[in-house]
Length: 95
Length: 390
Image 1 (cartoon, chains in turn orange, brown):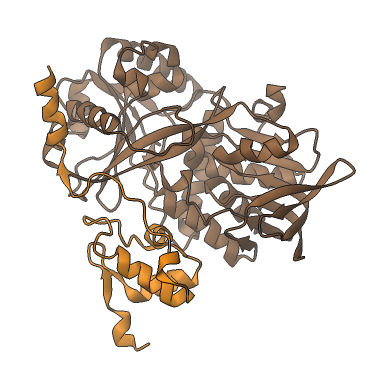
Image 2 (cartoon, each protein chain N blue to C red):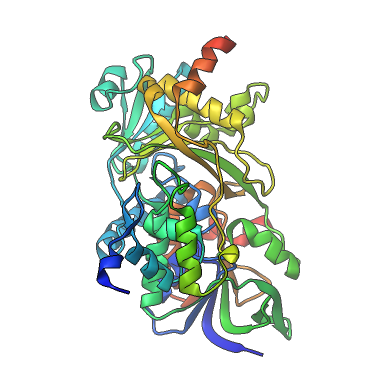
């Protein structure tokens, strides 16, 4: 691969490049979660909703396995960023 | 059949197995690590990063924690990966008169032990942590408390061990133990590989009992769920790692929180908040016995955040971006199990650290190395021996 491509940012939230992701796969990452724990790709504001599938594709290419076999990250609440006041204001309604 | 032979075989590459692997990797012995998934993918990556002394009972836990933070400081310079260890001081927030009574007694005990802790009143607390509610009754301050990135720490231990030459086998799960004259000499994996070893160490956390049922041993240990909330990264808000008095009371005096009609008690909710190096707040947590469920419950998230905003009112305008939960290996007496697993003289265990696994990782790794190499220990760790349950 050309060096030019190395600099492509895959996780925009945490600015993780394709090169870092490929290297971490060479060092033993095999799932989207592995890549996340090792590079922080997918730990940002969007929680991998943008980059998760791209990371899976890179893993599939590097490990030469079908993309369906790449384990994705666990989906957790909230679906998008939510202000804490939405939880604490309910307290006033309750009381 | 694929056969491998080691001096020591470590089972599990969570924080404890990785720490043991790191210390053994510096010795002239052949070490293998088998892991059913990959490095640090269970409990060790689903926890907070507290490296706290104030939460330890004076005694063996505190002694080991003190030695452990000493080692962690040295490792921070040695490891290539940034483990984000910051000894920024810790505050335990006092919310009511009962907590005040329990915590002032605890501070006296800790001071008598020689730990640098002190009581601060409301004004003194707000001076060093200005975003706290004026309603709090004060805090206890621990100079040596702080936080670390637990995922980075687990990876750093494991990566350094691999670099030093140990063999690592991910996706390798034990199917059975191999016996020879009542002596365990190895294991077979579910992929039908055989691993033989002079000594086998189980660093299998919450999965220990499932594994040990194959050889008719059961430990008084079970998974305890902790749910945690992650905020968006924000500018520095907190100067210290914070715990609420409830956390310490729950840990040191569980009988205080026995009224289960209070949902906070039922879910074992206590408040801890720390700001990571990347700026995210980690807000926790629950302590629930729910088997191996890692579900997030909306009710827990709601109560944790209510409790959190009562202590730090300005949290209300901050976004949360993620929730997660992890299963901690709870033991009946709150102490880990680090010893031989009799009657087998070559089988060892290091598990059951519950919420202290990150703080005690370094000293556990070192102690297990010393036990395996039959070196003299600097501590009497009889209290941690599996024999205590027999």
